[in-house]
Image: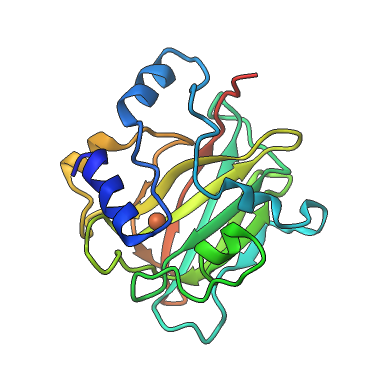
Length: 215
Ligand SMILES: [Fe+2]
């Protein structure tokens, strides 16, 4: 599905948008090694600022232990723009749908907390650049417009937050050739391989390569 119908569908649903928009322009800028002109254009990235970065750790639980759904472990390493140097101290803000594909249970207070539902979490990468989340596996939106996904926003010290490509699950609903072509590799590849870990949980690795900043 192209980005335009996806956006139309999201607007119709009043659902937090996804990072498929602006794909082709982003690719051109990335391959030229320049900062993306639209790096800071995203919905709800201010949610990354809703935590006290000084108190964050490299691991967080997104969903409550009683949240319906299949347990999912997400981990990865955040790298500098060279794709090799691990980056400590980077905040990652994650939010996702529940097992019914809904951003449910949001609370008034901030726009992001109201729109993104209760399944939100924050981590800060450790000295080795690593992070992890425990959560449940999200479901696609109820209208099955796009794949199940987890939104990631990154916040580097002293910088503005920005969205990166969503986590989507390779081989599952909606991860088509067209969807792959629509991806911008913002923050690196968001299409992850799903495995089972020793504890029987779904497990994925989403490494992140930081973007160049316009300023
Ligand atoms: Fe979404």
